[in-house]
Length: 387
Ligand code: SF4
Image 1 (spheres, protein in one colour):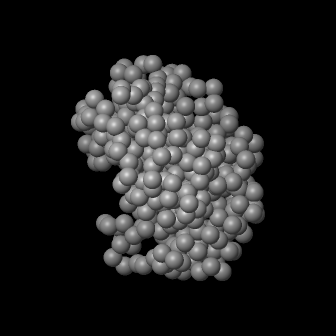
Image 2 (spheres, rainbow, N blue to C red; image 1 turned 180 degrees about the vertical axis):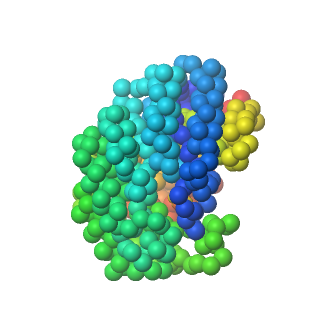
Image 3 (cartoon, rainbow, N blue to C red; image 1 turned 90 degrees about the vertical axis):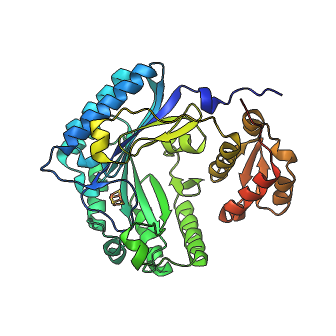
């Protein structure tokens, strides 16, 4: 049976991710592609010019795109001068039409909320600012090598809040041995009291190649699961809805851009080391700053789409979300009737999955063991192989 081509292959309404790889200091747990920011060098101008070239190349090849969301991430995008950021935004806006609901997000350092940046943010109207606060606990912030204090975060939030149209999100990290349940309760209380709109949570992982890898430990898996329960219960009681395992938002503040990743909508990543998911394929730009700046437009290898791998990925990212995955999409995109999958039936009987309005969702217990759940389903499923 010939199935229709999935919309993740054909859709021309996309998210746009811009990677700015500079940071004021390098956190010892972080394995993102980044460099220490040197304000005396011309690296920011170099980067902006290279990103402009990459955008022009995409515009030339794909003039008919519509932009659903624009996300400046990093690194720390606010290491740019505000005028650099406005230049890139202007270029994007003149290259493609923006969807009516187009969402704009920038990740910022709490110490970068200057009058110049506030003026630039205000110029853009409704938008989102995400700050890597990570914690309110001074011991934890020191351990994580962060430059800011909680007082800096409070000041930054107050300044941004003066722009009534900006939605504010903070990151929250857990899993460090210093972050006992008592300390985590204090952190969660501080976050709940601050009047922010969104919280993204991250369990500490020790990544090879980082200073933490050789020298640190994390809390045990069981303790991390307890920490997550504490986070989930406190944030939901404080008026945040969870919409993905790690993402909590006040009503109306869920991230359209991140939901695009989880709903398998296409996006282009621009800037060094940026990932893309476009026309059903995943690819990334080069992870070397000078090489990227010298030649930002490179051909990337195109391989046939592996529908088996895509199915597993779709299931994993979809089941992490509160909305789960659509049964109709499973059928149309991968030729799989999830309702008849014997593993799905068993997992529903075990109360790890549930059916809700034509969708398959993970229960709260299922969310805690999602790797095993997905593995069990994939083992019994045979996605179609498309030409
Ligand atoms: S955690 Fe954020 S600020 Fe720290 S080094 Fe990584 S990207 Fe930079």
